[in-house]
Length: 151
View 1 (tube, rainbow, N blue to C red):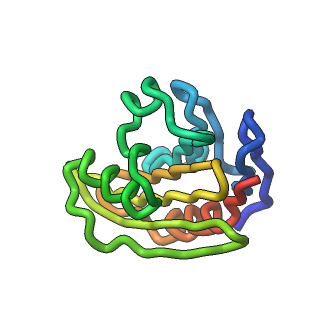
View 2 (tube, rainbow, N blue to C red):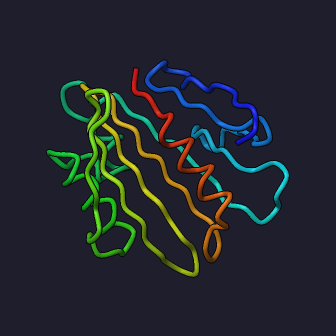
């Protein structure tokens, strides 16, 4: 993988490493990463929230899946909201961070959703591309997601 650069969320909730050949733009408040060289690649977006206490009404209106009591429930609600059957959800734990991961296809696109939760910090990483991702991009996205650290 190319030389890496670091990204820390504006709220200091999470960090990650991504290749210098990739670009980052904030679109509607959501950091979005994509290959700056390949015009046919996908995009990797990160949504984060601090769920101290209960999620507020505005947050739940925008992201109803946050009403889930567990990370599993949040992923199931998210997938249902996308019109996808909540099957194939995998669980991981790294550095005291719980994670759920699921791949799905919808409308001619490939999606990979990763949810991570540590304490009150919640992160949803969503990768999507038209068709299927090429092998090199899939490996790069995997490495970026492996570098995700909730702070």
